[in-house]
Image (cartoon, rainbow, N blue to C red; front, side, top):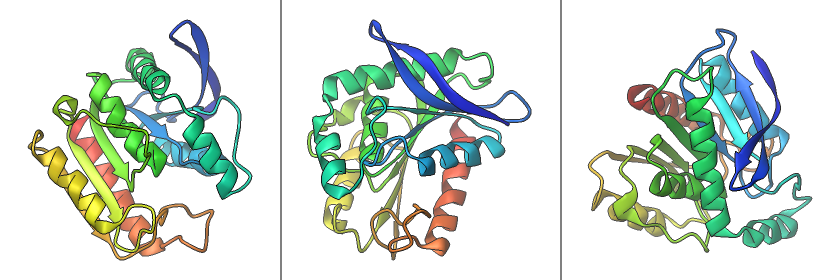
Length: 224
């Protein structure tokens, strides 16, 4: 496995990302999208975990080097994203990864957590090179999705005790997606928001995270 920071072209500038390539040097492509904290060690670790499962995993640095020091800082950084520019960055990342010499899949996956979950759906709405989506408890108040454009199969992973994405909101999202997409599969866990993040013991749920991980692998392998 080889991992490290790379650059990729984004609408006339250079974007940065963390890329992890499996030991076999080939695999399906997967974009991993950060929580509101930024491109932190946890997200890099997730890339490496997917790489060990045979994926070429790439996490774009959407904050361009910044990482949050606390929730207030994270909220400020999240809300400072220019969604139109971020959509272009997601499309650029999908194109770059799909064309990467190590990627064997015709299309790439997009998987994200919290803010990144919503952005994974946004990416699928602006890039037909994204062929599968995994949305972990996605939320971003400024992202307005065009559901008619989301044709990739979607796996939704949500938490019943989520204070940021209430259960009724998650079910509204599920309904909106299913109105335009026949390949939508939502799962609701008896856990808190960010339950997959093992760097946050106050919310991490090992059992739920394990189940969600297995569902994610199955979904991505089925559609890429």
